Amino acid sequence: MKKRFNIAIASGKGGTGKTTVAVNLAVVLADLGKCVQYLDCDVEEPNGHIFLKPDITSRSAVTVSIPEVNEEKCNGCGVCASICEYKAIAVIKDKVLIFPELCHSCGACSLLCPEDALVEVDNEVGELETGESQGIRFAQGRLNIGQIAAPAVIKAVKEAAQDCDIVILDCPPGTSCNVIEAVKDADLVILVTEPTPFGLNDLYLAVEMTKALAKPFGVIINRYDIGDDEVINYCNRENIDIFMKIPDDRRIAEAYARGDLVIKSNEWLNELFASLWDRIRIYLEKVSADHNGDFEKRKTEAGT
Image (cartoon, rainbow, N blue to C red; front, side, top):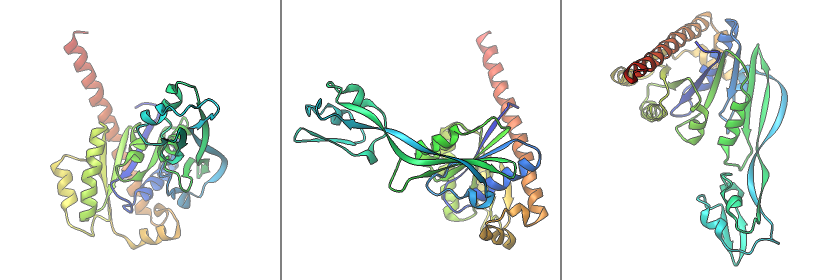
């Protein structure tokens, strides 16, 4: 196994228990002596801190570059507006208007402006906080109200990753570009779902996204005993590994409502999450072996 594993905890929809899995797995791994970092990439609504209660030791602004017009140089030619795919620039009566909330910071407008009338300036879109909790290194991002540049804040959170054995990425819900930014560097994606029609529908979408990114993945079914077997049947048909099934237990709900870790509410839950790591470790070793086997096979076929 390599030095560090990035494990993304994701879900096709909100409310499935994604953060519950992420924070409790992080604590169990720390208790097992692993060097663990928890990254809360759900920057529009981070809530891992409610359960981990970290001591925040640093805060820094997250910025992106946006264009600013030097009106003395600008002749209103409109080149900048014509090349902006996101409609963040408009030219009206030879005057350039910039809409920062639409800008994706690609830099094309300032690069291609024939008069060098556009310069890049920093625009604050969020905040990065880092600290520590229960032996876990902690980082979270928080998107400023009114901003839409969530991927930039998620990227800043991921860049705060340190040299640990395991990095847990608590991802945003859904399958949007925010989620893709969070999981694209993961070694394993764990999809948390629930046995409901909505849960199954959104699991379809999350599985297709993960397959498109060519990421190894498995499923955790939360509150598995409240619905039917359709999620289990789907996973069996698609040969998707089910890493863990969490029952609908009042003690879990009560611990969550208090902002406590569910593994502290009962010993069997601690054992359940410890066994989850065993499943993940075995799965990662298998994926690594399969990857190396494919590589050796390609080498043999290429005659090298």
